[in-house]
Amino acid sequence: MKVLIIGGGGREHALAWKCATASRVTEVLVAPGNAGTAAEAKVRNVAIAAEDVPALVRLAQVERVDLTIIGPEGPLVAGIVDAFEAAGLACFGPHAAAARLEGSKAFAKAFLLRHQIPTARAATFTRENFDADWLRAQRAPLVVKASGLAAGKGVVIAATHAEALESARAMFAGQFGAAGAEVLIEEFLDGEEASFIVMTDGRHVLPLASSQDHKRLEDGDRGPNTGGMGAYSPAAVVGPTLHERIMREVIEPTVRGLAAEGIRYRGFLYAGLMIGSDGAPRVLEFNCRLGDPETQPILTRLESDLTALCEAALAGRLDTQRASWDPRVALGVVLAAAGYPEAVRRGDVIEGLERAATLPGKIFHAGTRLQSGKILTHGGRVLCAVGLGAQVAAAQRAAYALTETVHFRGMQYRHDIGYRAVARERAAAR
Ligand code: AMP
Ligand code: GLY
Image 1 (tube, helix red, strand yellow):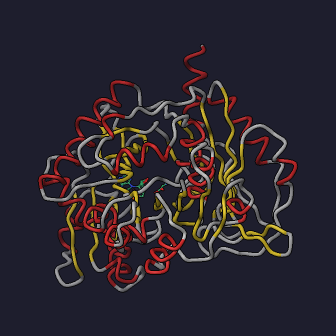
Image 2 (cartoon, rainbow, N blue to C red):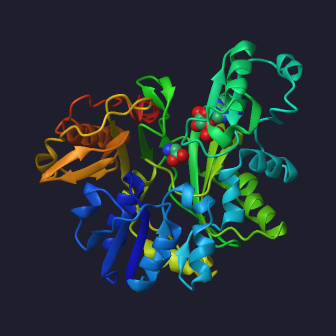
């Protein structure tokens, strides 16, 4: 079996590594991949951009690829799955119509409200119908969101009306290009965030292990929002009762609601949730893909053959599958480049990777590139060091032992990934 992974970040390194561990898989191609996927057994990089859909279709045809898995949202929203299917190729991910759940926050919000799925109250505006008086009548803080894809940067938590107005106007003025043509002004929700990711074939749902991401750049959840500075799985906040509630109140009505609207969602579906102090899950956002960095700890724990799960989903038989998980906790620390998330510097030499490879756990590459025998930084999030342990504290120690073995100029990382879960563990032990 030949597998093709589209993308070149840490999520895609984890996908390629995981697929390559299946004995029936002979080769995994990654387009474009990174220095980490280049070094993985049975894995080969192909220098085609994740957005170049026609070239990717040709690659899958020429290489006789049996299964393609899409990593990032860009090609999904652009319709890569539709293009692969039209060429008779098996491709796991939602069609463009379904990927709108991520591609348009305005669409997602209207969908959530239509189907009475719990979410923050919000209003959607264009530049033409924007109502500043309405905004001033809302209670601050407010959350201002560009509707379209903005690489995780299109959300502003505004403490005051003035800040919210300024953010909305900047978005209408083109701060995020076409992604800001529609802007959502949303009620601020308090609580603890959790990522809930499932696989679905459009009828059946297979939940993946829960996880929690750390979005802010600095320790103690301070500093700007990022794509994610670290994650761990399972997320202690999602116990069995909440898990059941999320399935019943969020995931099932979403898959059913889409089907009722004639959209069969097939792929990974990621609900970003805020768990309120009342214990209720509310949807912050949908992603039409796996999370990054959540995927790195989640797939580290997955014992089942991911390619078999994808194939079953493509056949509409996800109900025949179960996923089995390593009971240990996996925790990943993101090592980011100088300047991340604003102005990323590239080309710094990464040292210590050979030594890290002798330690337990695994370092997944994200923004890295090979040049004359050296591995260089080549993106905002550079590496993700994943440790495993019987408890969060032990997984954390293993991840930081890996992290501290690696060095590049300007390297930044958080020192407290998993802190909420560690505090819970300590409280439980007392
Ligand atoms: P999103 O891309 O919509 O998930 O927003 C990115 C981040 O902004 C989320 O992970 C939350 O940390 C935060 N956020 C988004 N919407 C809200 C909200 N309504 N209330 C509080 N925080 C939010
Ligand atoms: N880590 C958050 C995301 O992948 O959207």
